[in-house]
Amino acid sequence: MDRMPRWMHGITWACSIVALLAIAPCTHAQQDATAVQSPQRTAILEFPDLGAVPGTTDSRLGPLPGALSTTFDPGGSTAGSGVLGGRQRTGRLPRGGKGRPTTSTVAAGRGLQLPAALPAPAVLPGSAAVPGTLVDAAVFADEGPADGLTLDAAIERMMAANLDVRALRHEITQADADVLTAGLRTNPLVYMDTQFIPYGTFNDQRPGGPTQYDLNITYPLDMSHKRQARTVVARMAKSTMEAQFQDVVRRQIDTVARAFVALQSARIDMLTAQAAVRRRERFLEDMRRDARPDDAATADSIDHLSLALERSRTNLGDNVEAFEDAQEGLAVLLNMPPGEAASLEPRGSLRSTVPPPPPLEELSRLALRCRPDVHAARHGVTRAGAEVSLQRANRFDDVYLFYDPITYQDNRPSNQLSSHSWAIGLTFALPIYNRNQGNIAKAESNVTQTKLELSALERRVLAEVRLATREYDRSRQALEQIESAVLPRMTATMERKAHEFAAGRLTADDFEVTLDDATEVAQSYRDAIVRHRRSMLDLNTAVGLRILP
Image (cartoon, rainbow, N blue to C red; front, side, top):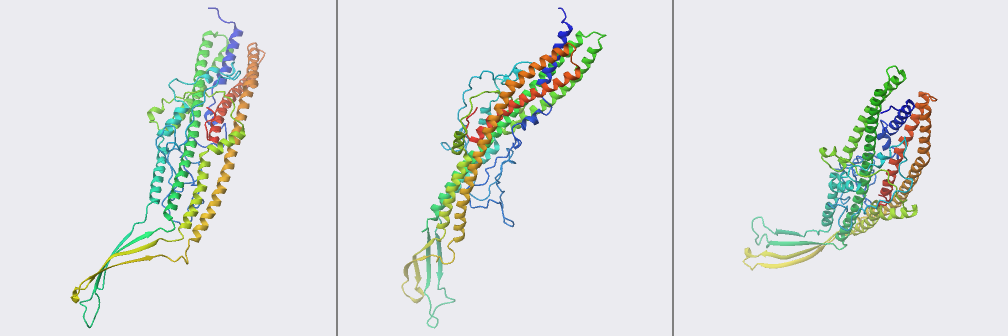
């Protein structure tokens, strides 16, 4: 075979260097990708927490100084909470748990269900990765192995297998027990006594008696319907914690989605690093085979490429470690054995073009209608009203009905017939001093407080939707701008610089600057793809509904 002209070798070398540098991920690609979307993102490993219970009369400020407490503060923040453990709840009748459904999160008919995945639309014209020397389109088109784990499958497994979510489901069972306890009646009292027992015997000088034996039954009567009010409060507390558990699942779905995207991004970085090493090895082998002993410039290029190959191998090791870390993080969320984490491969493309979501007004209405935390706050308002009714019912104590079915008077010491009788009576408290005024005032204030909390939550939810929509629009614009303007121009520039460098009209230092620019553009393109994919999933989380795949 005829050898290629020397100027073609130069062009091939330049283009290969560009492709290798462009697709080789940065050493800190994983850290950068994690922070691409927002600096306020939380860590992948989160502890699920139901948070404060809406409508409860417990203090929102946590335990007071000096107060005795045997439970942990449930807290209201999710920033430092994660899948490695749950938190206990304060007081009774607060949070929620759930049964084992695959797509529902609470009891049948009441749970938050995952809608069916949207059909993947056809790729819009011009949306595919731009071919050329800057971007390896095949890497972004690779959806992973056919038997890999899809995002939907990961979500389903998390809901069924995550130990912390499973632990929180038991809160619903405990809430059922609380409803049962609240509806129990007070037990009647049985009292037996003996009266007029003499110290010795009764006589004419010391008359007394006769000795009397009583059997008394005292039955409490709930005249103010406290039991019914307690049952209503307990049922409303259960409904509130069911909605809170749905919100835990919503947040955990977002956590799994972020971990899945991190795994996809790490896989792409690893694949590109592997491709970079293979290309450098092949190109270095070709250079050594075709090099002439008296060509000093070629020898210098070979030395430079050898150093670059070693850096690429080091970079590959870092990216392999980052991929294994991403596997471990997702495996913890899915409760996979450590042995299965090493074989965890994602299935799905990061670069998917879909029609835009509904307008902001429609998304806001959907969020207020679908977000489970909003539902929990609304149930909390109803529960707060039920607490007022309960405290008003507690103004009056039970009325005790006293019934003595038999009183036996022993007249045998006086040689007379013994007698039998019965008695009946009522015992009730006079509501003069304590009419539960303080607890009633507290419960009424709690209604106003809970309504204000609901209004504040609705405003935050609408703000989250606006921010997520804004991020989605901006990330899509940035991605389209890179694909339509930046990549073609950079590709043309690289082709021109490669010809100039091969022809000897461009110095190595100047060409190195161009290579650095190309590498930065290629990394920006990868970051833009990851950012846009995350913005799609974050919009789903903000709305509380799967509107984007």
